[in-house]
Length: 282
Ligand code: CO
Image (cartoon, rainbow, N blue to C red; front, side, top):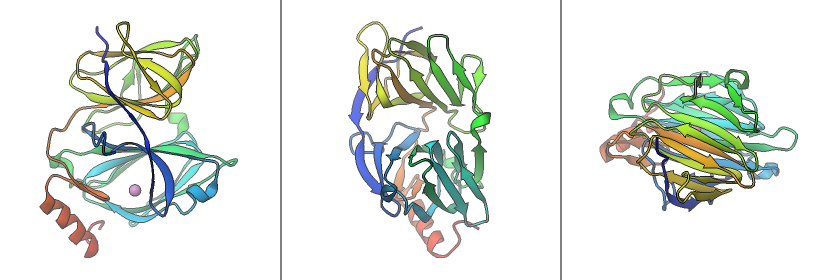
């Protein structure tokens, strides 16, 4: 076994989206536009309701998957064909937009807090026009592995040891873990050969890459994993918490604009035309 190394570290960028929701964009920035198959990672975190309360009113998606992971607070979700749900603290919604959905995502704070992530995962050309699909997963259905030394691993997708996450049937075979390490803690994670991936530290700090020369990834920084190695060794001097994502690269051309991610410019134009004509989500 050899550990993946971190080959690039990049700061998240403050931005806003929807109706003026303030967030930090960790992936999908000019410096790190894509880690195929992952297109975007946004962290939203605030105790000031004016940062996000206008939410993300009705908007379309086509050609990829959006994953919402709530840490604190709630997100009310509605779409144009009548699906409706309330994502509570600790829950995950893995939404495969496929050929198209139009939805709204409206944050609500809980005890003054609102914190979570949205991740965008690409779909291969052969599945961009599949029917939409939702996997709404409440916190009780997401396994957490706790080690004696204070290690805490929430398995959202893929596997950690023998524990398998609840998200299934995703073409890019993703690994998605939320990991907390205490000060002085360490852990190792299997990363499937050929998968590309990254870590995003959102509390404290951690060192990735094993014995040689590990790379420290501080809070608010993204670390892109190199291709070589079949595991990832991590330790944390001061304690930290990070997301670990890995997935099978799609290796196709990406044409993206706003809420649509297709393979060609013509397909993007078709998505806009379908949206304007009311054909996107029917
Ligand atoms: Co959306």
